[in-house]
Length: 282
Image (tube, rainbow, N blue to C red):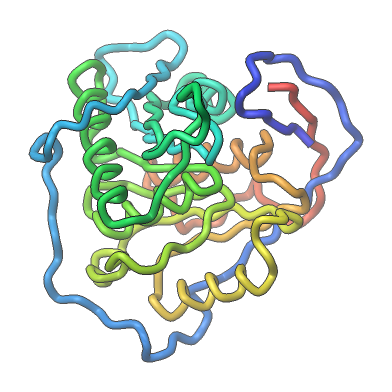
C-alpha cells in the first residue's frame, strides 16, 4: 500500500505486496427518517466579504502552470498535529498537473514551538476557520488563474471533519467536498441549510481498520447522512489509514468527474476486486 507520512519530506517509494479492497456504500438508497429538519432560508456567501484573518497558508502549483488556463482549486485542511504545509506533500500524489492547492492552518497550536496545529469545533473557532478559508480562496484567485466555480474543499482526519462542516454550512460556495477519514459533523447548525446541502457533492474515504473510527460511529454517520439525504459517495478501504496513494488517486478521479460533468456516471476503472498498491515514504 502506498502510504504517506504527511510530515515527511522524502519522495522515495518502496514496494509492498499489499492489496487494497475498495468497498462502495450506497447512501442514497437508504430510507431517511423524519428527524432531519429542512431550512427554507438559504445562505449565500460571496468571496472577499468576510473579516480578514491573518492565518498562514501554503500554496501548491501544478507542473508547467499555465496562467491562461483556469484551474480547479483544492482547499486543504490538515489533520491534527500538522500544519498548512501538508498540502505540499499531499497534492503531488493527487495530481501534479490538474489543480492548484492551498493549505490552511488549524485554529489552535498543540506544541510549544507552534509548528503543530489542531481544529476546534467551538462556534468561534469554526467562524474563524471559515474566514481563513475564504481569505485563502481570495488570495489564490488574486495570485493565480482559478476557476471560481471549481473550488473543492478537502481534509484529512479532523481536517476532513472541519472541511465537511464548512462545506455543508456554505454548500453553494463549493463544487464538492472530500473528507479522508473525517466524521460527519454535528452541532453548530451544520444542516440548517439542508436544501442546499443536499445538492453538494461529497466524497468520504474511510479506512476500515482506522482505530479513530469504530464501526458503530461509522454506522451512525452513515445513518445521519441517509436521514439528511446528502449526496455522499462513500468508499471504504482495507487499510488502517486514509493517507495512502490509492485513496488520493481515487480523490483525483472523483474531482475530475465532477469537473468534467461525469459525476454520477459509472467509472469503468473502478472495480470491487483487490488491486496491488505500493507504500511510499512521503
